Image (cartoon, rainbow, N blue to C red; front, side):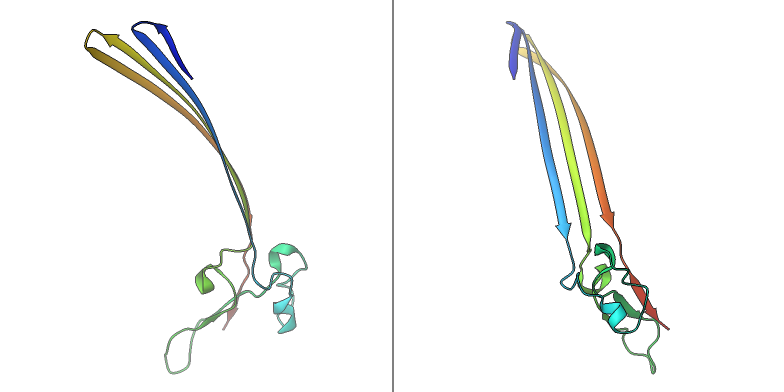
Length: 127
């Protein structure tokens, strides 16, 4: 909103709002995969512990690369399950003062960001 307070004094106000909402899940989120392969206690029955865990091998006989299996951020780039909601609010005010052929400008921006995230990962280590 632009307002001319006088012929040489101007102000403008703006308000902005933005929402970012992420809900991701594993492809096998509803399967108790760890329980099925004998690793009891990792899949507790809730949404956040379902699916296959990230499986990393600490040592491999005769050297070699360390394979990873399952789902996880370092396995298949799945940062899931992830439920996140972010709200951003912004209030901007700018002032302009005219002095003949010259002008001076001053502005203030106030922002507020709120984030609510819940993520839980399970990782199995085979020794």
